[in-house]
Image (cartoon, rainbow, N blue to C red; front, side):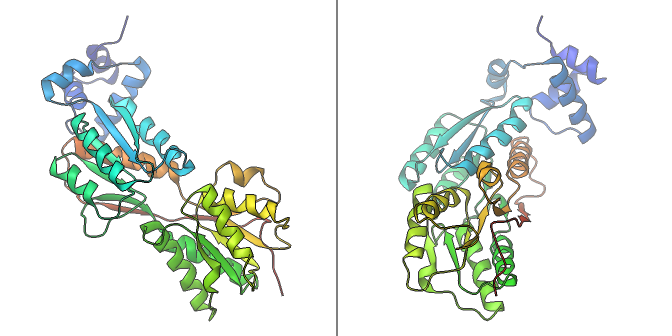
Length: 334
């Protein structure tokens, strides 16, 4: 027999009213929330969200709107967000805009029409129109990975400047002077930050990067591949490269193999994020890692807090520091 709200209350040592208050999205004490969530998990309790939604004008669904589903970064975020919100009684709708600003707006309107209770947005469009549309309809919103200038919203981001700086600074410490970078769209928040960190480290060491050694890979495997080929086709070739995104790192590695280059003998490489590539290539890849699971979990928790009506600390910008891993893909030069 399926567990009931009375079973949850008894297991948690709380009143039915308190459990009902929590299930209906109202704030409770942290200790109470933890006890109820433990009881729900142990008893495998599933509230009747259809009936509950009719009573409270809620759909008990949230959405994740992202640029592309074939991005390893995006898919890793989906998993941690969903794991956070499913135990709280929310189903998750995932929408992809295929790196298209007009489609992003259409998908935004679609989610509004579906009456989702909240949206986690990994933005693609830079003008903030999608944010304005969501906020105009009073739907709780959390931005993930990007801030959009002049648009007030909760944001969970990486310290991108630090990631770019630390990666480049390490290569300079090893004696490299001709260093290249593969970055994303120069207009995007993450790209600007990682490129700025790269340029700051070069300037601090009184080094001037070759213009052709700064290439856009559009945060894609194909983009990383083509960018690496362009860099190696320059008259003055770099001795090291920082690739500022995981998918571009895969593409750059494919190009490096095509060019029959040896890492780190021909070129030292620092990539991005601790996904499968970092653990299977030889020599082991150096990389800057962002805490994707933690960021996704925080996004889910913060969205739920806003859905419950708690805006006491709005807007929040939570910035995470990267973790650096230096392995055999980089070497010291004279």
